[in-house]
Length: 441
Image 1 (cartoon, rainbow, N blue to C red):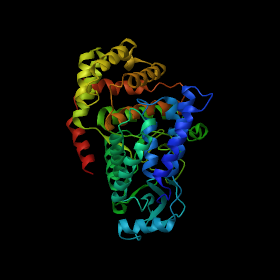
Image 2: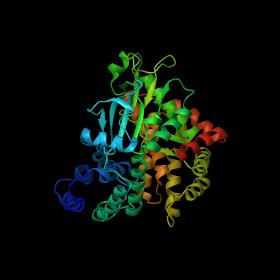
Image 3: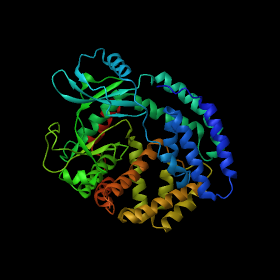
Image 4: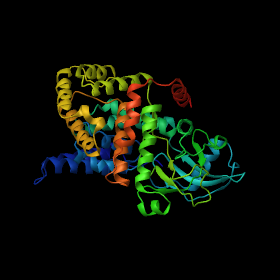
């Protein structure tokens, strides 16, 4: 529900605290950065909604801000207090026109986030389902008003967010919210991703129940799962963390490099081992299977960007700085007037081994990630459009997820074949058709 706090008053208070943190004695630059991130996380988290999204956006911008600043903000997981069940029922009835499609809806939510909450239910014909219901107040008009308010409030914080394009950030957060609150859109993407991955029996995307889905409600098969960050439960479920990590890496390799349509939020709260011991688990192929949930944050790459990414990987492999910079310029990544700094940064990255990234082990990839952050921050020559930011962030999060669930595992073993096929092969016509159907959904 709508937060009663005044965003401008709260952020003005945050600005005063940020100013004091700069003067606080006994703190070095890393500690000051960390303290600033903590202050912003506290205020943005308390405001919820679009402001929590701002915190999550800042946490992702390691190309602009230090790791010490970003880490406290990364704790702003997308959750909120539960909406009263009476309002949930009313939203379902408003969206579907009736409550009679369900014989039972559990009043206790399975989970609640700032956009929606999920309830277990049963359809009239006895199907066990999970119903995701958008919070009633999150209309398109409300999102637009909040984004306008965010743009004004951001100016209060601008002295502590140097390098961030305030207007662009507000626009991208608004676009993300508009997409996430459209649950019918999410259902279309989930179905498209499921079709893309249907030939891999190790991957489960829950079926959408379109007769119980509308703009404010999406209904999926209920599939019981085991969290990937619970190794004891994984072992009891007949799998190993290594197997789960391999399946996840393969699944993301397919989505990112073969399909150009990918689930963009890989973490242990969205990927589960299917609990085969549970009678509600769907019948499938032999061996462990991974369940993908929550397609609110998914990305469809534009065909032109796919082509630029392919050329970029080729330029990286043959160490062609000119071709790499030309591609970055076409993709809108290179900031006009900073070409000299961009070239120096690219040459430095090549000298440090960026061209060998595709053959590197996990430790080498992590080192190169650190170098990339440093190059971006120091050169101030690059900006990442939203699609590229989600693309890079998803790849980074796959590494983080694999390290979390199976420490020491190298995801590049599974990703590299997909990368090489992507670089050397043109997009198949069938893949383009699937992508177009997803964007129309």
